[in-house]
Length: 132
Image (cartoon, rainbow, N blue to C red; front, side):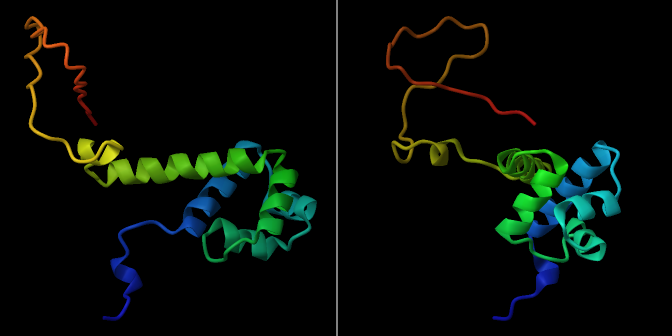
């Protein structure tokens, strides 16, 4: 089976990283030339990074973070938030039993309807609702 990049269902890290770098730069009111000069990278290279066309090495990311006055952990946290948002907007369903470490859920007591009195079973079962 051949890989067809047009059928990709997940965003590339370089694309999301570039979007966050560009947004951070623009939020600071800075130009490509300003940040590229401060990071000691060429302006065309920074532009390629921001457009998700090039992969940045850890050294380049460190230089860009220094130039932007942010921590690498902040940059990566912003990238993570974007990826999570992208996933949520794609309508990904997360099964509750896959989020537990105890293994698959087994049949058990049913949660009472809203406003109903608790059953008093004391089983410690937790029921949560997720909404988009």
